Length: 329
View (tube, rainbow, N blue to C red):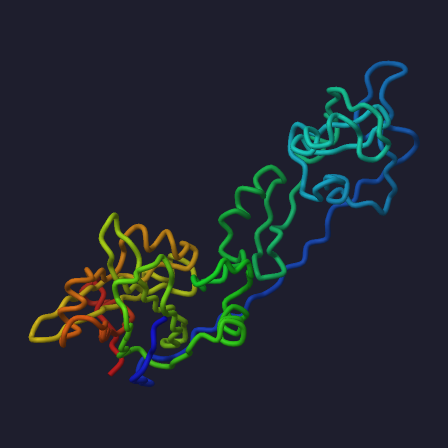
């Protein structure tokens, strides 16, 4: 494995003000469906038709629209058995056409009334407790939630298939305490990567370091992998936030020796994009092994690679209408 030494992270207070917008919660009480008399919620078929589920005044519509098998919200077609028990179309195939509640045969009965009720609802985004204030029609809510800016982030650690999700402060603590990732403050970095046998190239992450600057967190990745048949090393930066915020920052990477150098400059990718997606798109500084060994000097039998770089924030220039960099010195 790689040994790491001589890490220098130079911090500066210039341009480092935190923009901490408070996330306000907007609880919206779910609508209640009140039931008077013996009316059906799920429409029966003719005189001795299918009985509807009994709906108490305190049962929320949201609960009625929850599939009893997978507990996800149900979307058309919503199915029901002859006794009025409902479930989603995905689970209908899983239960082999048997009602999971009463074990009766399901058939092909649609709960059209419940589908109509759902169509009339407006509900808060399921991430409202994380700060999303939006309210959507029931059938539009799912599409929004897939792209909601308040949805949790996946853990950006690439050395294992970590399934942890959460907001940025939670993930920063998780990376520090669970994955034991190095944390540094500052917007410049100077890392030296050493590997005794550079010819052993595996698809494995070598290094992840988290930097805190401009009130934001950035993940610096360095790894070795096979690009086709050629072994390469790659360094790239990811922003711990959404893509729109990531566009406000730029970074540069440089590696070299013997009066030669390779440089890379770009915009960090959001951690919404997986580590593998960024790596496979080659969006970073890629160093072929023979060049890396040339930079290492000596007999080229040991990798000794120094990667330097910096992060800056693009500041709008109100006079020229263009962005100018705000640099950390």
